[in-house]
Image (cartoon, rainbow, N blue to C red; front, side, top):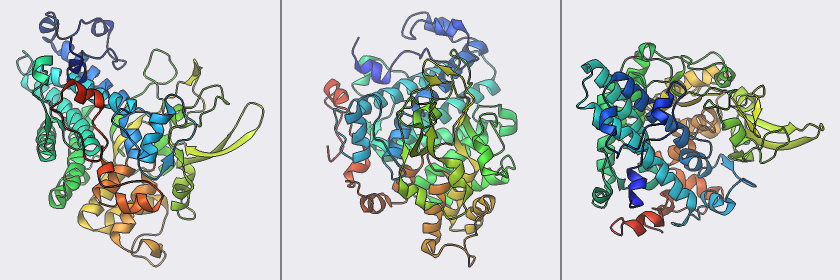
Length: 471
């Protein structure tokens, strides 16, 4: 079989959420004749949908594509000693990415394999004998996931092959890079459908996509497209829905036992403590590259002093977000800054991995409020976030004068409120601040380097796929 088929037309993944049964794991690839006999009942589609949801574990992994770009290519973090191919990983940090980078190719594969899982569900459910309400719900959930992935991809690579149905190896040669405008048009179309069909958060169920999740993502997409009017309208609908609110304490957001709260809009579900469950790797991934505590930290996204200093005096979010070191079994303290939001110190250690129980929030209400200030210029939304943190509100005498404009205030607030949540690089790109901010901090960045290269392997397999400028 041609290798390109594995890039954008892979088999259904064997990684499923904990509610899936063995029957799904034992399915033959969907290219086999028995696939047509599988997609028949609601139970079948529940299993396939769960498999599509499970791709979030790959895309939002602490060493996945959104982490490497959203954080490591920004200015919040760095990596030093790290497991695996350090040279290829350092290229993200240093803006020296090459088309032959093995991580770039892996991330390309991760996205398109995940998209195939989603597209096969969308394709099969169109003709399935299931009720219309269920069909619309499944379609809305899958379209949200597809939009989320394409939104990340178009920010990471720019023009990309836009695939919205399962295709054969032969068909894949005719799928070239689509203009950015076409990719965004598909994202908007999918999210508008999802928002019109999905239930409110109160009825959606934990971990499932809701109307508010589709609207929140759509608002962010509009803002990235430069459409502040539609962004503001859509984000205000999230606020006026009454489904979400800021928790009284920022620190409680990160407890491994405090999941799916009123502040959470879309959250990836994990279940710690078992080697057979999808436990959370964020604490392990962001712990320094050491096995001093009985598990081996990956050393991803180590916090730089510039981020530590971004927090104002008395801002408790710094204490809740950043650890300043660790003490090993011998009582020796090692001073190092690393993210602590997802720490779970009571989790069991299984095979030098800590089986943590923390979920990961892809979208939360504070993000929506800050996006609203960005879209409207109205500080009332930003000030809700500041008030929760116990910090002086924008427009008051006690507010720091160094962030005197609403744009500077919003940039600052998003950096400290959403630190290490895979937002920073995308924020700087969206606001056209990436070159100014990153160059001032020693990054060898240029306009061309704000997109990563198309992998060599992809272009070797299809010479009609073009390369990004600068590579």
